[in-house]
Image (tube, rainbow, N blue to C red; front, side, top):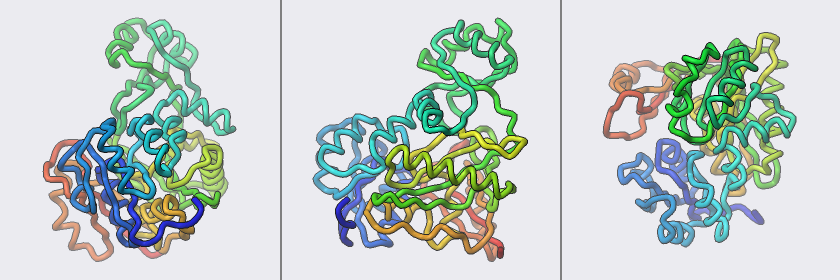
Length: 359
């Protein structure tokens, strides 16, 4: 990008979920307009968009309209079709680059990329048949996680194996939907951490403090900052995230999830080429949130400081948890953020809150 976007420019966002909504809020604070394209007419971000295009991601006419409206395009989740990003990139800058999107969309491609970049992951192998699964489980001492290579999030599209017994394997591949699969060795981790990092169009990198995560039913429940890890582990996390950003020639914010091992070493679990649930705490405990940081990056502005002014704990409000909002608002050091979703459903992320404490 030759020069930063001027105030009043329009940022296009593919995806109208809560992440798109929060990106739109951050863009408005910096003087930008947003145009959002999403297939769902009642998407949370539609409520805040300057222009909302209700269309499928492969609707060529709608994509043409988005390109006409925008000065740069980004996306709020990694399941946007790569073909869509590439089509838009013929007319407008698209950040993060489509190559990063393509890498993150396939778990096998992702792990091959990470290992080639010198970043450690759990052992893995491609699975196309029950014979592949059986051989893999035997090589992993009977323990592994079978995952769809594409799609799947919040614990969906996964099956854990604790045995290589034929009875356990029978029908497992077909039950996953007949799609390409990957088997990953189970990692004896002590905790799960993640980090939010950003890279600007000038190559500058900024990394937030690592957070410690707790999942329930495959969905992130709580993120705590600071993470209970050693300085050496924290540095390894930061270096891995920076290495990923540079290897991808990335522009924007990325979320990187890690397993922490007993000796303090780390393995990358997965990358998310977007703002990330485990970074929501930054809007309450940092001067520059992950959302503003992403807008700064894609708009060609200088990256902001990543230091935190408070320790904090962020929790998701899932399903009926959102009914706790009135009571939560009685707490003096709590920042509440609801996503404007009209229908409460089990497993649906309805909002989050962050409790802050003095450092």
